[in-house]
Amino acid sequence: ELKVEQNPLFLSMQEGKNYTIYCNYSTTSDRLYWYRQDPGKSLESLFVLLSNGAVKQEGRLMASLDTKARLSTLHITAAVHDLSATYFCAVDPTGTASKLTFGTGTRLQVTL
Amino acid sequence: DAGVIQSPRHEVTEMGQEVTLRCKPISGHDYLFWYRQTMMRGLELLIYFNNNVPIDDSGMPEDRFSAKMPNASFSTLKIQPSEPRDSAVYFCASSLPPGYGNYEQYFGPGTRLTVT
Picture 1 (cartoon, chains in turn brown, blue):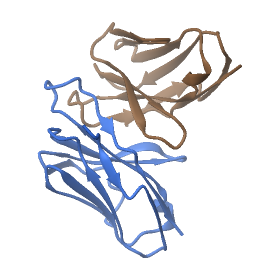
Picture 2 (cartoon, chains in turn purple, green; picture 1 turned 90 degrees about the horizontal axis):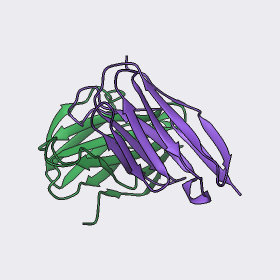
Picture 3 (cartoon, helix red, strand yellow; picture 1 turned 180 degrees about the vertical axis):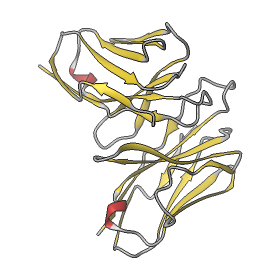
Picture 4 (tube, rainbow over the protein chains, first blue to last red; picture 1 turned 90 degrees about the vertical axis):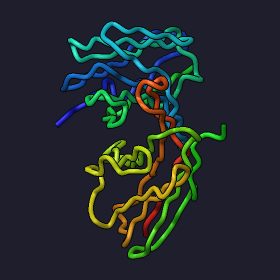
């Protein structure tokens, strides 16, 4: 059974600080997704990483993928309060962009 | 585009009643997905369709759950009879076929179902 684990599960950080969220998965996958979810809201796509070594950046968020290590990271630079949300990674082991398995989620709280 | 549309947004029903959730995917998207989100189990894929045909329903929890997609712009997820453990947020998502887009799944606003 495919397992997708994120850590930490909860992260409280001060504005201006840097931190990294980790996503480990248990089977081969060349594609990985990062989503953001605000409380009571839907999921918003942040990044789609399509190959080993892929790196994407948007604002204060940067995601990377190491398929050999089965690891993706989401790095937060100089956090601001607006980044407070739950972040999910999702793995696509079939390569069809269809059957996604989501991680447990990391709840990020950025404090002043 | 209006995005993925789901209705109702909230549903409260009594145990034993039939519940029908509705979804309209983004126009031109050939894939449609139904997910369930709970605190205990997280986000789970229930079933997905390609060109209105169910491809994988292995995530459907039991026979009380059924899903249909009668045409490219409409899908339903039905629970009959409903039970309190079905209480969750149900999301519908849609996407372009692999190779025709950026492989993203676009999620609807969700239906929050409460079964009492």
